[in-house]
Amino acid sequence: MIKKFFKNTFIPLQYIRNKTRPWRRKRHSLKRKLIDLEKITWSMVKLHAWDMHKKLLTEPRYKDEKRLLNFGFKGYSQNEEDGIIQEIFSRIGTTNKIFIEIGVGNGLENNTLYLLLQGWQGLWIEGNSNFVEQIKNKFSFVIDNRSLIVKHAWVKKDNINELISENQKNSEEFDLLSLDIDGNDYHVLEAIDPLNARVVVLEYNSKYRPPVKWVMKYNPNHAFDDSDYYGASLKSFEILLSKKGYKLVGCNLYGVNAFFVREDLMKNNFLDNCTAENHYEPGRLFLRAWMLPLHVENFGPFEIK
Image (cartoon, rainbow, N blue to C red):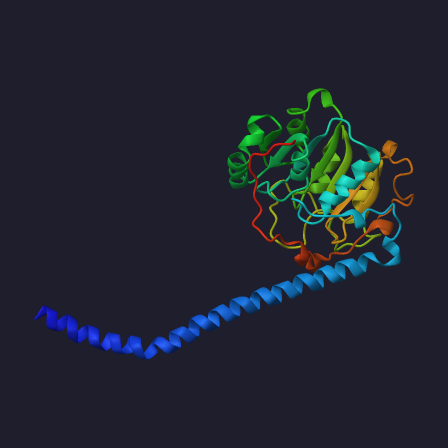
């Protein structure tokens, strides 16, 4: 009885399976074709973005060798900051190769990991506890050998000096400060005293073109909401850092980060015109397509030899 039941049930199902087999094969074939089409389309997008990127850099504005944009490349940075930072230090030299980066995400895409690979040492400060946990797991190799110190903290203007001084003995000079917290950046930077970095990299809000002065109102509880309400205009940062003894030497092509060098290190290494009007770059994040890596970014133990 049971055998007969299964037979009567199975035969119709087998019939349906046999009849639909050609359609299922077509579905799988169509799926493969769509995947191939997606790969081809994405390759075309990357090629087009690369072409636009290169054409932009041929404009007369960018031909001066003292500008930094032609030196950009991406190692672990979000955009081409790795190359620009490398070029700045090739012009002014390094001292102790120490960095501080505030706002590093999970550690795999920021402005100082590429330096860490080259023997630098430093401090990462990150407010997201999940990211900090990921960093401690992924970067245990460099944390254990004291190349990297990781601090979990929600950065505010009231605690920034304490956070830095805890890990900087005698307020010593260090080579690089990178700041990207998607909100109170201006207020935190203003509160740092003394500002002992030789080079400062920070994110500016490209919505506000020079000569517009615009600073987000300080909110110690601010969290980035993916909107364009964050940070400060490039002009406002230029004025603030000028008071602290720094000159604006460039921005990246995609209008995300600005680069400042301490005034006594400028010499003849950069353009004389250090205004936001001269260095401002509009937001061009659509050009980032060509830089997206072929493989998923990762990190592990390594040797410098």
